[in-house]
Structures are given as structure tokens and as C-alpha cells.
Amino acid sequence: MFVETALRSDAQKRVRSIGQADLLIGIPTYKNAKTVARVAQTASEGMIQAYPNLRHVLVIADGMSTDDTVQVANETSVAPGVEKMVTLYQGLMGKGTAVRAIFEIAHALKVRACVLLDADLRSLTPEWIPALANPILDGRYDYVTPLYTRHWNEVTINDSIAYPMTRMLYGLDVRQPLGGEVSLSREIIEYFLDRDVWETDVARFGLHIWMTTLAINEGWQIAQAPLTTKTHDFRDPTVGFEPKFLQVVGTLFRMLSIYRRRWPMVQTVQAAPIWGEWYPTPPESVSSMRQALREAVRKGARRFRSAWSAVMPEENYNAVVQILGQDEPRYSADLWARTVYDFSVVYNKGEGDPDKVAMGLLPLYYLHKLSWIAATEGKSHSAIEEMVQITADAFMRNKPYLLERWANYLPWEGDESLL
Image 1 (cartoon, one colour):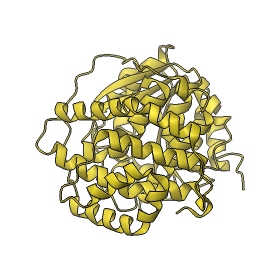
Image 2: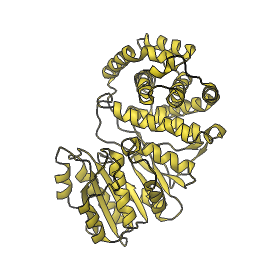
Image 3: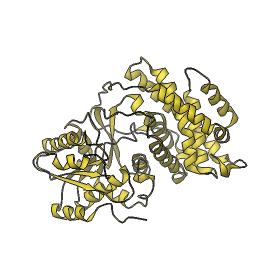
Image 4: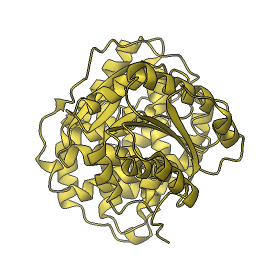
């Protein structure tokens, strides 16, 4: 059932009592009891230090956490001069609904700028707040994405799918299209709130790729904010990852149909402007979890191997099967680009369940990740970043392949039962 608002009645009453604000920081939470206090305190310090004369509100929007997140948030002291508001959102469970609640508060308070921060950040400093907010408060930009270094093993879905796909499709080089730390103008917040998407995967983990894609394609002014390096609570990359992968990749793939008249015309790439100086800092190292990835590939191959042959042309399928037999898999950038394109086309044009098509890509994503772990071992961050750019170039180089498959795809016999 459609929910008219993500705000409960008590939250609406609190918003009316606050009245108006200039800068709002929103922190969507779900079981972040260990980190939310520091994030809230640091964010509020950044607000007051950078903008002592503005009216500030800090909102923590929680998704019915079963730990002590809400209690900790309520007990956390923030900098004097910052109004703190802790609320439980209503509607579809997910990060996107938490952000919808934050957006509704920002809209009601008529803020000049809204900054979103992940609740599990460990690298947040007060300086991040003006880095994100200044381009919006200055009036020159509507949507600001983060520019930071992260260990490749933490950000694989961004670096191997979301970043190269967004860059290739829409011609704007936004390095972190999935980044959780963004800032927005009041105008783009109102635009997002008016979209009829809040009962879809956008209400979950599809949020950030959706916002970035719309900001690019609907003519909003976009910048990137340099934020050094990002570290947060690290988890086993295969545990509980299926829903996030499905929501991010599914939302990304759906955008191909929505903007099907735009992306085929894009042939060049330009960089999104950076607000300030960017000095890349080597990120903190994290575990590769190779054994967990290998087991996920084995299980996925047993489940999806026959479906892969339906999604991919014979040449690509045979190449993938060959990689599966390697002790140290080597998945080339060109083959990976064509693999993602195969799945994106069938997701949009096939007659089977598109979510099952997206899930069929997950084991190959893990296989590609294993290949990357082997290829990047012992390399510097700058060398790894060069490899990310090589992958992005491969996606652009193989765009004619995507165009041909998109234009000429015909569902194979039995496609309705695919996967």
C-alpha cells in the first residue's frame, strides 16, 4: 500500500515546532549503535565550526533497529546550536525510505542544503561537512557526490559495475555514484520527493544510483566533493549481500529503459567538476575474504550455469566457463563489460523475471572480484585506480556491443522461464 508520508505524526509535530532551518544533516540508521554517536557528534561539530551563524538541524531516521541505535541516538549530545531530531520512519523498510523521511523534513524546514551521511562511518571529520555543503550553499550546484579513496575490496560493486556503467551510459565521470555521503539543494530534494518511486527498490539500496542517474539526465548541476579516504564497519562481502546487489543492479539496469533515447547517443565522457583540491590518500586495507567468494561462486555456478548460456552468446559463455576452471581466475575487462551488457539487455528485454536475471549475474560478479583480488595483490592504490579506469575504458570501448544487442535482441524460445 502506498504511504503518503514517511514521517510519523510525532515527527511532523516536531518539524512544525522547529519551523525553519538553513542546513540539515540526515543520518539514516539501521543497527548502528556502535557508530551513530560519533557520526552525529562529529557532524554537528562540523556544522557549527563551518557555519556558526546558520540554523542547523541534525536528523537521525531509523528503520526499527533491534539493537540500541535509537537509545544511543537519543542520548547522544550534539554541538550547542544544533537541533537534534531522532525519528522512526514509516513505509517500506530500507535506506531509501529513511532518506525520504529526511527529505520530507528538509522540504518542510525550507533548508538551503541537505547533507546525507552513512551511519557507520569511522573516517568522518568535521571538515567533511563544509566540503559537502559549500557547493550547495554557494548556489552553484544541486547535487554533490563524494570523492574519496576506498579499498577496492570494499567498493567493488561501485568500481566494477555502477561507476563504469554510469560513465559509459550518460557521459559524465562521477567517481562514486553509489557514495552514501552526498549533499543536495532544496530544489532537487523537491524533485526527488515528487517521483513515484518510493514503493520500489529506490526505497532500499537502489536509492543512490537512482539519484545520481536522475541528477545527470535531468539537467541538475553536479559536483564532486573531495573527502580524503572513507572507512566504515567492514563485513563479509558475501553475507547478506544478495538483496543489496539486486536492488542496486536492478535499479541501474531499469534506468537503461527509462533513458533509452539518451544513452545510445552518448559517445564521449566528461569529468564532473571537483569543488576544491583533491589529494588522494591511500585507503585502509581490508580482508579479501577469498574463501567465502570462492564458495559463493561454486554455489552460484551450480544454480545459474544453465541460465548463463541463455543470457550470454556462446562466445562469452564459453569464455566464462573457461575462467571458472582456473585456480586463479583472470576475467578480462572487455569480457566483464560484455557480460554486464548481456545481463542488462536480458533484464530489460527478456520475458522472464528481471530480478532473477540480475541475481544470475551475482556469482559472475564474485568471480570477477576474485580476478581483481589476484590482479591487484601487492599493488599501490594509484596502480589499482589505473586498473579501475582501464575497466571504465573497456565499458566505453564495448558500447557498440551493447548497442547491437539492445537493438537486435530477440527472446530465445523458452525465455519466459529463464532463471
